[in-house]
Image (cartoon, rainbow, N blue to C red):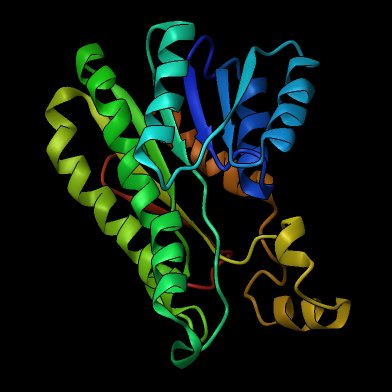
Length: 249
């Protein structure tokens, strides 16, 4: 069954590990996709891959920290399809450094990429969703937004902000039929993350996890799909944790 048949979805950070997993899954489920990423070449390659599987997709280069670029992205989706059913905020990135070694510009860059971008993209799609009387917004938070991180303070603070922004926006738009949720992965075995570890470091790290392994990007994507599909009709303002039991509530 195509859970997203003919749904219009914008995915930011779509060329990355989690973003591409979401895009491919959404394509298989029948969504029409706008593949948005700052890396235009990677976005176009992903678009071609998705189209080979008989899914409709277009790519656009976007800087999610700039309002004008975000509005161009939303305008592109509306010009193609006339509506926006789903926004998936995946774009993000981390800086691994102690607080005393982080300068102001680096702090601002990480907060802008991970938190301001969610605000800008969500704000930009809301007029269309209000007009439609419905829509789904799903943003990627992180386990570090709930536990903190010894050397990723800017990233952890921004991802905590994503979770609280999600709650706040959900309250604002609930009566318009718009649902706003987040997914907080733990360690995910994306190419970028995996490259930061030697094989031994990786095995030692995941051996401490309750399930003994990291999340696969597809597992994170399936949580995003659950929140974005029509069968989710009454969940809003929530963060789903995909961390294999590393954090329990």
